[in-house]
Image (cartoon, rainbow, N blue to C red; front, side):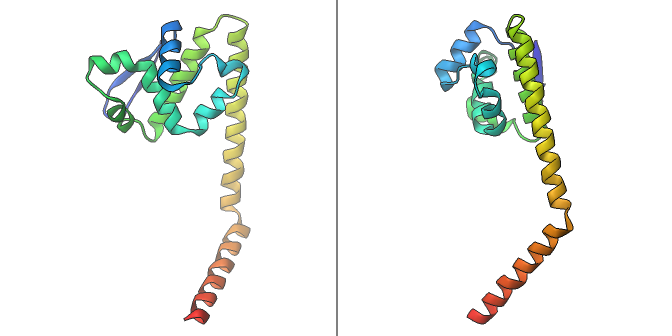
Length: 151
């Protein structure tokens, strides 16, 4: 059983079973079973709106008990809560599958996390690069020169 706490201090339990899979597919069109053989992990990690829709569908019975609609649910997800919610969803998916699919999913999730970490490190290095600052300053000077000559 995986949990995350939203920005409004609501605790959400993410449990994946066959009824959850059916509900998510009916409400969002997303087949959670594609997480092993498809690109679902990548799609959920790169599309926050899709992630929020899938999470809401997964926890909908809890939300209904507390009269929380999908918009109110989404308002509680921002910043680090998104990371925590993603982790809870992925861990719940891993727990759903029997071995050896569970092992495959753990490996796929770990690989994807490693690639994302490396990509963020590369972006960070580029942002900290003196060349980027030089390029931005040159572009700014060029834009200012064009604006001045156009006036």
